Each structure stands twice: as C-alpha cells, then as structure tokens.
Length: 198
Image 1 (cartoon, rainbow, N blue to C red):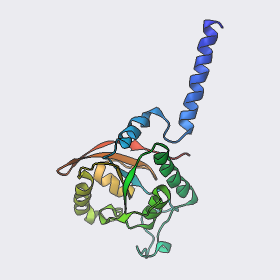
Image 2: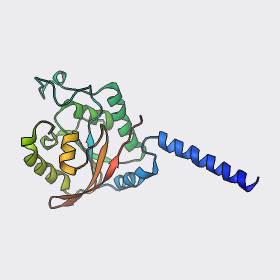
Image 3: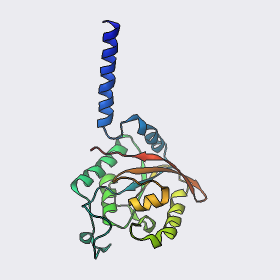
Image 4: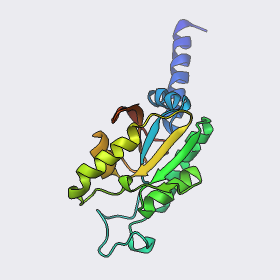
C-alpha cells in the first residue's frame, strides 16, 4: 500500500472514530477527564432537571404537593434522564447519595437516572422568580456543596436558576456541573457534562 493510501486509510479511520465519539453520549474525549474525576469519588454533581413541558417558571396555582399543577418532564426529558444514569452505570461510578429539589420534575429526573427520588433538600429549590430568597438559599447550598466527602458521588438535582446562582454556570436541561468540595464554604467547579444523546 502506498504512503498516500495509508494516510487516507488512517484519516478515514480517525473520522469514523470521531463520529462514534460524537454519537455516543459522554464518549467525546473532552468529557473523559471529568468522568475520571467522578470515578475517583468525593465529588458533587449538580444536575439540572431534564426537559419539561414548555413554559417559564411555575404555572399559576402551582403547589409542591401536587405534581399535576407543575411543569413536568416530557418523554424526551425522561429519555435524557435515563441516559444520564446509564452513563454513570456504564463507567462504574458509585452514586452514594441523591438529593433533590422538592419540585416534581427534579424528583422524577433523579428517579429515572439513579433509581431513587432521593432526599428532598430545600436549598435546591427553584430560585426562578424568587430573587428575595437567593442570598440565604445560596449560603445554605454553599455549605451543603462545600462539605468534604469521602467515597462515592453525591448527586444534587436542582434547577438552572439555582445552579447558576451558586456556580455561575447556566446548565442546559439534564446537564451536570461537577464540583470538588474544599471545606470552609469553598468548592471548585471542575466542568460540565452532558450524558445524553440528541
């Protein structure tokens, strides 16, 4: 085989691998260092709930004790939540604990991804349209996230507004922000992960 043919063959193979990496959730090399961090344990994953029915904020008359009054996950959102959990299991990443906002879309995201609705944690509540709550809630959430952990991963399923207020990162639905607790009210943002397909 000529040198030019070898180059063409290698280029085609590299292109095929790239297409596979882009098609498989979490397979792209840019995310692998974050998956490796998670494999090592001791991190917190702040996950935004998956895609919901269209709308902004909460419907009029929304009640936390009645999921029928809330914006809930779509079928696509449910699929994305399941795919996120599958990505953790495929890599053997141990999820030690799951915490969720009291909103039904967060509890359902957690249940579909990790097999449990988790423990409700009020600091993970939705901050959209609730600016007066932000300073106190961010302080409480900072204390929760910055607490050093040994062992597995803690996943906290919340809302884009809440995760953004804490980290400065505005995650897409079902996107995750990985942080390393540093104690004394401090944590480091390690990066962002999307573990679902299109």
